[in-house]
Image 1: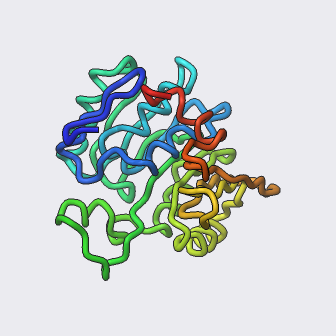
Image 2 (image 1 turned 180 degrees about the horizontal axis):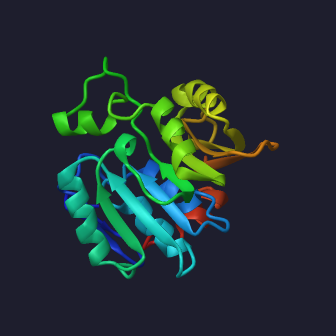
Image 3 (image 1 turned 90 degrees about the vertical axis):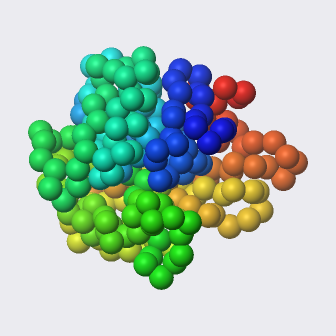
Length: 235
């Protein structure tokens, strides 16, 4: 991956004008988020448009994906990435804040949300804006998810382990239930570094699993390969 972009099997992402670059979290979310029968999908904080395009690749032709991005420059680059992809009619990029966003309801909302606290130092002001929870808290994410989703709608997130308790609290406060939890382990034998979470608005049992990225013998975990192989060029 160069500073300008990353080439996948079916599309290319330029991200030099985006604060948050293509990374493992976004790729996992885009490859894993449960689409089911969703026909309208909202990607909150789309950045370069990566997750929106991954969902476009995975979904039926009649599915509509909207990438919502607060930063004007990043939204512009996301729109360029979409225009150059195989799905320019399927994916739309809109610039603005979730808190003020209004649209017909969605069946699925996905997000790789900000999770660093304001006490942490980041590499640049733009990166800080993209990642500090002040721009979009988990409370706001679930509150507006409730507003923008159908009664059968779901929220799919990728979060670090330290954000799990807050996510569970805010989900419950807004009438969401944890339907699926995947522990993501960067290297076999180590504790989970992040979680993939899916919340729904109908009370349910939680299914759980583990995704191991790197095995102890230097290869990749089978579940991880199954998720990302449709996207990575060399898998």
